[in-house]
Length: 145
Image (cartoon, rainbow, N blue to C red; front, side, top):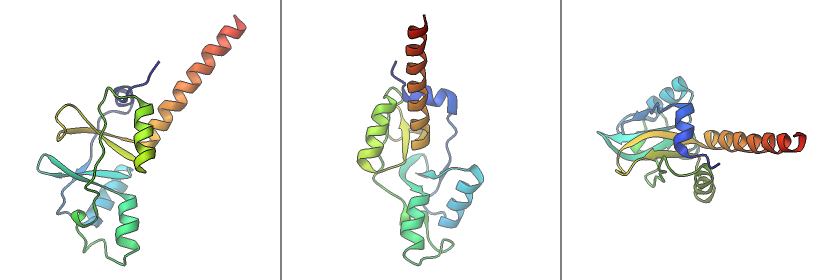
């Protein structure tokens, strides 16, 4: 059984947190902290223009000696955003995350600009663990039957 991204979203939900590129990094960090998440979609109106993560903050603000209250999200956001379709598998998500060294994938339907969810590496790993546990359970049942 292939676990699809849509299955993760059925369990996790599709709450999506976003921020404007003109917001301060401090505001982005506060929102991430309040929602206990590691990344935000950056939206200019309804259009996705990037993604900003805790990693962006650490590498592009702290290490460069900038101040989060004086730096705008657009200055540190990643503009090369890899996306995934809800019908793709968790294995495809893991492959994308590994090959591009990213931890979050916006979920898009056919219209690439309309993001409706975000999956994290943790979501993908949990789905893979679940799949492996189910396979082990089925093997155990066969052996004891």
